[in-house]
Image (cartoon, rainbow, N blue to C red; front, side):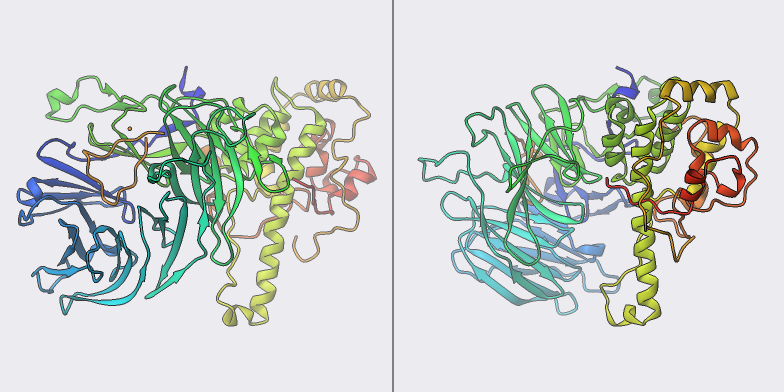
Length: 595
């Protein structure tokens, strides 16, 4: 397969670190996304690297025994190291601060520390087998102050740094999960919930493993993902991923089930709000989008993979060394290796090779793999870097050998206008609230963010419609004869009364040692990307316009050709004196088509 057949890839510039061996131990900190390479317990050096770090951090520590966990606080001000199950050591990395170490033991007697998590630059949580202890670190005094504690039996834990939530596995079977939320010196106990296991286990041992649970933020909401290796329903074959929505207020509810249709060893990532499920046995991955329509049974929504299973695009590891050596051919990377460790949301680490990658989604290959243009547009509109691909799809539908039927074109434009109108309405509401002075009183009121999914008529004309003026009249007439002269391309788009007033499995560890115990799996459009104006990029500012509202005052030569091609409604009515009154009048109406 060529590059156009792969919709997942590893980033071009991974973090390279010294690979794990009997001397060098590797740890990963999910909060700071940093890799720690600890040689000989730190006596011969510690090197810290991260994707966003321009320079690595290097230092030495006294070898006081095996390192179980090591992490920097947020902003890299304080280093915490756990060597025993009873205490954590601290060292200040603040300029002009004391370099002497200080230690904090857990308060609960006979408790063992399972790990710790930084929740801010000076706040840390100890997770023990008997509960949680929330501390404030006082670096100038080289001491810690206990803020709050909670007693309960704990089997294992997970930490979601983006949401500042720690999830504890409790009870004998481990299936009851207790979440805690941490913010600005406060610890909030959220409602506990129970994971539905495939069958009632007969054993009295912990049945729910931490390697089958993940936490991730999807479309701005926190979810707990449970990899259920055997479906509860006898008629359903294969494993499935169950999503539990964990709100800040209210009970956690099961909302989505992702049907995998196979068994074996799996690992989960979340990339651009897509759930990516890796299958080690077949060395392939599939993606799920919970925003797309699924099968709703009244309680949960069932989803199937958006696309056929594909492998991650083959990756070549460059050969490091002196210049004469680096001229050698790159070494192919072993994908889906048993040494791969997967962290949320999009991290893949190969401890044996010494690389950390970010997983990425390629949108261009998806265009050919998802023939349903309406579903394709629903998918693309939810992605961060979607504008260039959407414009390419529109251009492909209106010209070239793969022209789409006019009803399909209408459906796609309906969805684009709906997205544009949603942003315009939000912008207008914010402007009205700001003018009334509500923005000062309500900190939750924020200016709407203009994403790349907002495509106005200037974008459409510049990158799609203007190219049609160069087509021969015969080509446009052929399109009309092909689709049928009696077809109204904008049927279904007109919404009377709506106007635009106001705006024109299994896992392995990293060398058997972890930072915090999370386990997992043991084109650009030719010639168009450079032409995109800077303001159309992600989060660009500036007013947007609905596709069918007044266009910028630009000369439209041979407008009759655009009218003949079935897209006249996108061109200003005053430039089309020959178009029908129905189409010309529609240029003043906003689109509000359903997705």
